[in-house]
Length: 358
Image 1 (cartoon, helix red, strand yellow):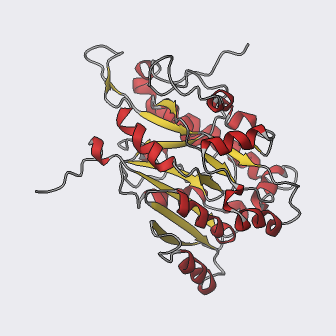
Image 2 (spheres, one colour):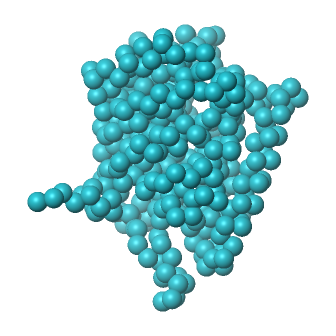
């Protein structure tokens, strides 16, 4: 008999990890491939001036003994895209999304490495999530219940500040346990002040809503039930967690083109650095997605020196990238408002609010 292929069938809940990376950080992928138990799509950005040597590096990583579950996509950048300011980060993510054949997807950057059990933990919770019709609007106004799962993010603190990327790389290359592999290892790492909540020292708004301090105490469920903890409100509109989302692809590149997609694509107008993850989270909020937090599993950031593009983002005197992406984000929010205006009163019943300031 034919095998069922309906993505919403519980036995078919699977998650693909989508990763975008530059050649210089491709090496980190080897650790992810050892830990992630499901399919991986890796989109590798190849600068305009590099071809042959780059593909040799990718072929090495694609060796079945290193990354047996990964599919590699070569993305040859244009001259413009090969300039750091124009790095097509959301375009790369979308190229990866178009290769996804599973019911769910987790999009991460290559320097975020999963815990050993992350794939299995996600697989265990997906069938328990509410995905159906929400009747808050009455019998004539059924709103789809959409749920996304937040994967808590942490960062490894090097024993001493790295003076070079080679020094930063040496820790993981010499010892895969440098990045915690299990919840208990993570907890010990945090207690020893060798790990911290991701970007807590320079971008607290990015992940504070996850309430990782409570998560580390195993406060994973709603009250006495085994229902995953729901985020009741965002501490700030700048929340940008890593998310497991249901996936059913199309080919849009911006808000206006993605009306029929269950989960939207990333908006490709965002490039370089800044707002490129926040825009998707904002889109999911307006669509009425519910945000629940995954127990036990996590991703952890491998340390590296600040990238050239982040330096340009911070240099507001010498570069217009920061201002350009901020302006783009305001235009994006305006687009969202225009798209969802027809159903806005009903939709607002489901939108996760911003927490009241105390």
